[in-house]
Image 1: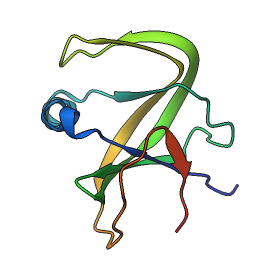
Image 2: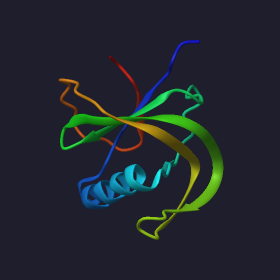
Image 3: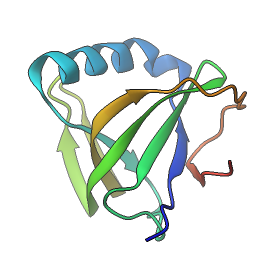
Length: 112
């Protein structure tokens, strides 16, 4: 089966929270979730979500579940997120890709 990964941008205002969430994920064996306003129909369990941070692809995680029209609360920040699509992920990888990316909203399918 062909992998149809997606790419999302971490907003600068969320960098500190992202660092805290990553630390908790690694120390406490937690999963992370990402909320989208649109469902990426070609994304499947086992595909990866790549994260743009500070103008480059910083990391990726494997999709373990996709839930539509739901609400979740982050255990690290205590914030509640609702959306049309929530992607549950684990298997954090730090990426060493020499790809510069301008920030964007929503998601894009992986182009490389």
